[in-house]
Length: 443
Image 1 (cartoon, rainbow, N blue to C red):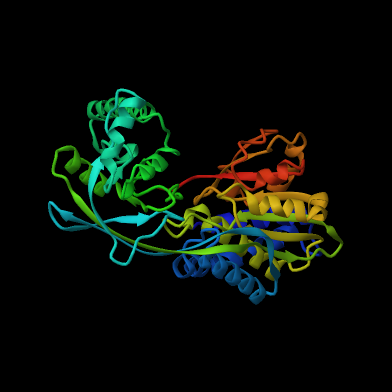
Image 2: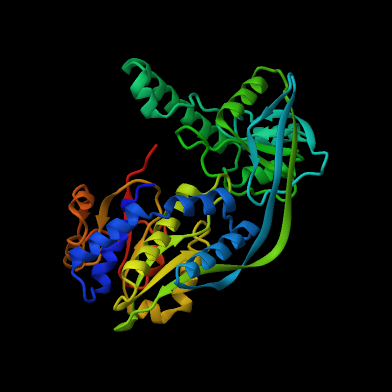
């Protein structure tokens, strides 16, 4: 992950917090030296993403992550604690084995969805069936009894597994355009197929479960190599399994062509009841204006289809590393610096919303909040988030950022509040200056 991210936030914080006894140039040089020569990013990423892994709300891994973050901050001499904001459905993932046992034997790449019901130790062995192309909802209702005791595929069979940028690089212009036209038509037809069932993508699985399906097979695709986030299941008693695009396509074609493939699925998980949920809050106290605050914001939770690196492990370790560097180089800021690692962004900004309600003194004294929640790469855009005077402040703060970092950044003032899809929105709703940075995504 580029070191420029935590450098960027360090330099901004220097300006918002105000300098003490040293020139801006001297501090910038020290911060740059520390970030480049003593970076802890790789180690932090390893401990958080490789060792702890995904951080689904309500799981033991999320609890482990909070413990680790608090301990890490304290090793750096930064006061940190967990602040409970509520409870959530406790759940723990176990193993998932998906094997096709007919017409040939092969292990498939798949995963049980978050909060999906598990199976017995012996698993479920059943034939696979595809959704029909019904005339209307009555036609689909008449077909529904066919799913009893079977796995049902519910996702569109993608015509290609290559992202568009790969097609542009290697295909002819004619073949690329032909593929896009066919894909568009196929996508339109698939959505019409779902609508004609009388259900939508949220309610369909429940209907299939009520009709006696043995399980649901789907495939989320990110329009690039690999799978999208593995979202939560919406069944009560049968497993929902997400397969890789390649394996899903093979299974779909076998079913479509009458080979009647049979799957054996073993999916283990545990329900843990209601469990407490937390934000991790780290604080570097201000020396002159302790009741004025600058917040480094990133959500700590993730979906658990992978390690949660891009969303939002990168944001987490960026803010942690910025705090480490500031504590070492600039330990006595005039204003209080808070690092907020929010415990439940993916399910409705719950952690940051709770913080706003529980800590009104921070909201009242908040000078600026910087939120990072959209992956790796350098900062490419800064918006004033709709605050009328944002240009005056951000323009001044950016002067402390070295030219080689800021020269490619586009600014928009005053900008707009945005879609509210990340934790900054919890603070913007209170009328305080909370900003989301846009980053260049790496493929």
